[in-house]
Every structure is written in C-alpha cells, then in structure tokens.
Image (cartoon, rainbow, N blue to C red; front, side, top):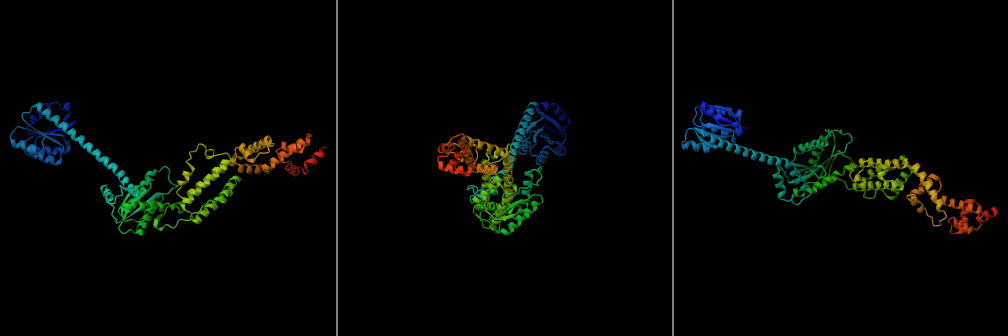
Amino acid sequence: MYKVLIVDDEYYFRQALKISLPWTDLGFQIAGEAKNGAEALALLPELQPDVVLVDMNMPIMDGIEFIQKAKQRDQDTKFMVLSGHSEFVYARQAVHLGVFDYALKPINEGELRGSLLGMKEQIRTERMGRMELEDLRKQARDSLPVLKEQVLNGLLQGNGQAAAAASGQERLASLGIELKGPYYAAVAIDLDPCDDWNREEDPLARKAAVQAIAQREMESAYPCAVCRDYEDRLVLVVGSPDGSSDALEAMCRTIRDKVRELPCSATIGIGGACRSLAAISGSYKEALLALKRRFVMGGDEVFAYAAAPETGMNVSLLPVEKRSGLLMGMRVGNPSETEAWLVDFFGHVRAKQASIEMLLLAGMEIVSTCAEFLAEASQSFEDVFGQESQPDMLQRVQQMKTLNELEGWIRALILKVMNHVHRRKPNRSAKVIEEVKAYIASHYGNEELRIEDIAKSVHMNYNHLCFVFKKETTVTINDYLTETRIMKAKELFDRGDTVIQVVAARVGYADANYFGKCFKKYMGIPPSKYINKMG
C-alpha cells in the first residue's frame, strides 16, 4: 500500500476526498491529514507519505512554500496540487517544483483516479530502478575484493597485461590500492603446521586473524596491498621509500611476534626490493624461496632472500650403500637398528644443511625402498594401509613443509611397513619354504633348474627368497638343492641302479665327474665305493 497525506484547510473537503475513491482497491491508504502546510510539514517524518495531495491557498503556510520545504527533506515523495485557482502563476510554480499533477476544484474523480495510478506506477518504477542500482552497487562491492586479488596475483605471477609499466599502478589505484614507491618488495606469510591447534577452531578464522595482524602492522609503517596467492599463502606487496631491508625485516618480526599471541606461528619470507611494480614478480619468487628455508631451519622465523646462505650439499643423500643398509635393516626386522639408521641419516642431513631439492629426492628414494621391500614380500602399499585414505606417496613427500615433518612421516612409514611384513612373516615364510621344497622335489631332475625359476614359482624376489630361505632353514637354496639331489641318487643306488652316469643324469647332473665330487662331499665316499659297499 502507498501512503497518502491530504493537506487542505477545508475540513469537509478533506472528509469528502477520503470517501470519494476506493483507496484500498487502488493500492493506497490515507495515512493522515493536515489543515495547513506547517502542520503537514511536522507530520512528514512520522508518516513518510508516498503521495501528498495539497491545496495551494492555505493559512500559515501555503502549498507552494510547503512543497518547497518538503522537497528539501525528501525528493521521492510525489505531490499533486488541488486548487480552486487556475491562474498561470500557480501552475508555473507547481511545475517548477516538480509537482506530478495539477487539478482544479471541484475534483473530477476520474481525473484524480488517473493521476493517482500514474503516480503509483512512477513510484514503483523508481523504486525498482533504485533496487536494481543498489544490486549493481552491491555486486560491485562484493566483487571488488576478488578483483583486487586477481590484479595483485597477476602482478605476482608476472602477467604482462597486469604488470604493464604504466597501467599496473593505475589499475591498482582504480581499485582503491595506493602503493607509493619508488621501491617495492613482496612478503610471503605462511602458517606453520601445528598439532596443538584446537581442532574445533575455524581455520579460516585463524587465517583471517593472521591477515588482520599483518595488514594492520605493515600499514602502520608502509603502504601495502594484501592478497592470497594460488597456494593460499598471504602475500603483502609493500612500497618502500628507500628499499631498505633492515626496517622491513624488523616489521616482519613484529608481525611474527603478534601472530604468536593468537596462539599459532607463521613463517615469513621477504623478497628483495625492486624499482617498479612490473618487476614485483621477481621479488615474490625470492620471497617464496626464502620461505622454503623453513624446511631445514624450522618455522616461526623471518627469512630474507638477501640473507640466505649458499645452498648446502648437492650430492645424493642416499647412495647405494646407504640405501642397502636401510633395506637390509627392514629385512632383518629389528626396529632399533632401523631407528639407528634414521637417526644417523637425518643427523647427517642437518649437519650438512642439504638443499631442499636433495631432501625431497631422498624422501622419494626412501619411499621407493619401502616399495621394493614390500614387493620382495609380495605386498604393496595398498596391503599395508588397507581401506585408509592414502594420497600418492611421492606427492605426499612433496607436500612436506618442514624437515621435522618429513622425518616423522618417513619414520612412521618405515615402521608401519616393517610391522606389516614381519607380523605376517612367520606364516608366510613357512609357507614359502614348503613351496620351495615342493618345487625342488618336483624339478630336481632338471639339470637346467635355476634359483630364479624357483623364485618365480613362489612369486618372490630372488634376493629376498635367498635371504628368507637361509634365515628360516640355516642353509642356502643351492645347498638344499644339492642335498636333495644327492639323497635321491642314494635312493637310486640303494634300489640297485649302478650306472653312475645314468643316476647322475636322473638327479640333474649332466657332468658325472661333478656329480661324483658332490656325492663324496655329502656322503664321505665317492659313488663307486658306495655302490661297491652296497654290493
């Protein structure tokens, strides 16, 4: 319903006007009435009418003066003049004041109805327009932070269009970002992983709190713009009058100390100063490189790219003999020996300040060693972790943020793999030994029988099979095969077969002389003497 205020000094005219039309059916309601302009002016704040029907000639304050003062308060109210005067001067003044319509008394109900419906449509159209305009403004306000992020990330990534020498600063200025140089530097801030955090706390709220601290402290000393990069790190693009790194480092340490009060910790990387926004991508890359020092040095620190030492040792951290030592320790299944290997390995890494790249490569090689150990036992990572949700192992290594995190994860992985294999080893080993013995019993007469064939028959790695067989039986597979052949030859001799060459061939020896040496080694006498003794 649209509200109507009637302003006329004639009481009976006001009453007649109120009953002259079906106001409700037309979408209106009579909100109030006044007998002069002053009284009507006092009612406006309370009633806030959409339409005012006003007489021109009234005591105290006439219609023209009332409309002038009402317009100063509210430009949206629609006015219709109802007057017994037809003089041109009144009509001209009414038009000048933006009155919607002008009607002479006595009022024609049809004309009044038409004017009211016209005002109603105009009010509706104007309100729809204001709503659409407000929606557009709201969309612009809502999209502004996203647009700022896009433009700043374009600068950080070295996007040619965003970083154009002249347009880059102008584009930021159009978004309300004022960055005064003449030097610029990028600061990257990343929250450190922490097991002590309250799991119920919203991580987005924590990130927002860190951003508020960083922005507040930095803006107290430098002009800066803030965004989150594509890895969700907080990045500050800072303007500096002299490019000095000492003052910027001091401010970053202040930010770090403030973040500790949340409580949590963050690592901050600072890129070198550059002379234009178009070159800020270089400073950003340097800030990320400085941030990587957290991997070796630990978090909750401020690292400046300019102060970074030369990269540490760049040779393999896991040479063949070191890798073999880990594999042998896993095969033996002694957790204390494996733990000693891990302590020695990571102690060496820290002492030599190995490069991040070499550390990640070593982590991948250790994962590969675990996979080889599992393959020897005819197992895989899927068998170890079952239904647990496990990411790609190599990808998991690359996601590590600190050396302590990498060390802890590798230690847990190795021990879990060892425990899985050795927990099921007694049953599995016994079964494998029986399968090997059965295979030999069926194939000992084949002079071309090789251990590789036996390993394939039980689906086990050659070296691991040799290791398991010797550990479980105390003899090698070769010795067991030889013993089996000799005992089978003895059985043949005992049954009356006396042709040595024939017996040797039947038990897998193409060379009778070599058979004779093997027989004497096990039986203490050569085959000929054994036959004679039997005779």
